[in-house]
Length: 109
Image (spheres, rainbow, N blue to C red):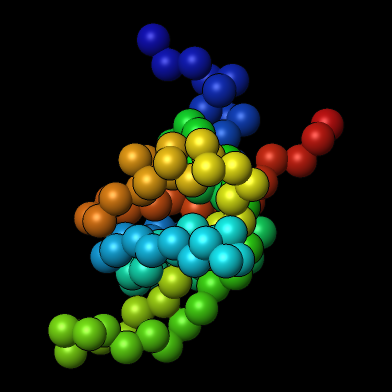
């Protein structure tokens, strides 16, 4: 049975992003997902939907990155992590080939 309240409470997807690779910039505490926006428009402040544990908002979106294999330009979503455990969790959740659904953060009632 579908929980209608849970479905209506979920924020709508405003963009999807295909992850082509990840990297970590430890000096800035940044987890970076490199890839392409499939639908919509990715922007700072959006959150990843449907992946429990990936709980930080998008810090920034960097566009116009060159693909080292000569493909079309890519972009990167950056996320700030606070602890190494958080980074380790994200590295297991966000892997090459996954499609991230992005939406607005829920607002308090």
